Image 1 (tube, one colour):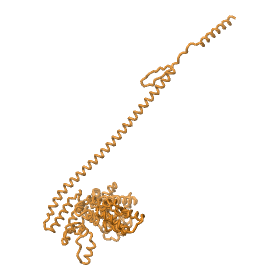
Image 2 (cartoon, one colour; image 1 turned 135 degrees about the vertical axis):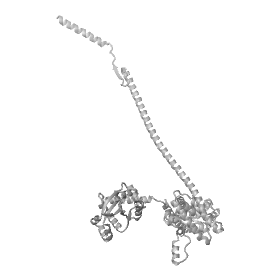
Image 3 (spheres, one colour; image 1 turned 45 degrees about the vertical axis):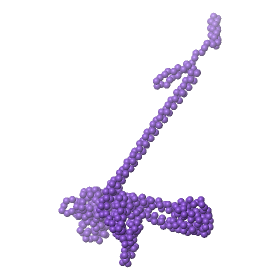
Image 4 (tube, one colour; image 1 turned 90 degrees about the horizontal axis):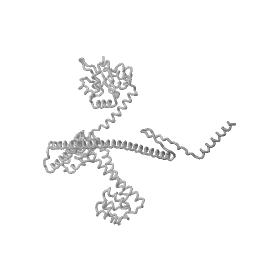
Length: 546
């Protein structure tokens, strides 16, 4: 008698196995472990009761996704209701590998679920010998099904991204930090290299990007004249600095430089300038991405600091899961563990120190405002992560609250209550979301109209082509008939010139042309023939008389 049923989820389908002598097996676990490796012994312990193959790869993916999330799919529910024994005093006992799906099955189907222990060993054996236990399934087919389902499951997990495109933000902020380091290093190299020729320029211009542009523009300082003063003013944005550069170039203590060295310095300076320009473009891209992915966090704490928080947490979802106390010291882990080890004071802030609020607060209020700011950052990140339509309404309201708290610390003016502020934010956010949805609907309608117009244009173009082809065909027929008529007229003219032409007209039949030759006229040759005839007659008459 089968007292335990085991559910096994395979890439090919669901399988339900019946286990014999469950109490004895439960007592002899080492023997079970040995029998699992031998298919002969293992098949005597269990038998296949039912197998439900998946209809398609899409159905298999849907079922596996449901199992991974702990949800009972309709196919699994129907399979178990059909094949598990119903009725009786005792509930049927079902062994499953995952406790999460087991709890859901227990609630929905009212079953007694068993996980771990002997069930785990039996499922291990079933996984090992599955292709032998199911008729018509080969090891190659089972491995192909597992491989295909694994690929599709991984692709679905990659596509199913709740935190939208925060991976791009993580890469952008990392590249931005790297570019800052590289531009700084390269600018110092340009300063050192060009400083041999024009050392006074370093003291006049402190900005790295401006220095590289000036090094590229000036080149040989001896060739600098009053004509290039306007170009210097465009770069430095200061006429006094431009004049100072011009004066310094005339009385510089630098060494002379060869043309080949100048060419290399100019090319390297142009590379640094292009890197600086790309860094600005990357910062704009980061700002736009933060506005799409985490608009509230960007509005509250800034684009760069918000991107650093997301990058340090790993994703926007991870940041939303963190409590406010973790967000407060995020980025100061070394200082925290050092303080715990030495029993010193723990850090008050981490990455959020780079925001403007903490810098504006007094020394005694820095800890308070960092704690309050971390709380608001946590709220903003959760709203960004789980809201369907991204808006920056909540971020602006939270920023106003932090400003009010700062003024409260400085002047003692009581800030507004959080409940009132959030009510206003919810009302404004609903209006903003409705407007965004309206805009999206308009865009979709415009897209559809454009597609319809394109289709209509294509159909009309095809119709016009057909009409043109017909017109061309008719024109060709007309030209053929005209040519035929001309040929006939020419033939008739030739015939009439040679003889008399008689035409027999018909509706559809071609006209038959009969040529009648003219009768010959009576000439002298005819008279000669008559005289000869008369002579012959006379000769005959004479012969008869003789």
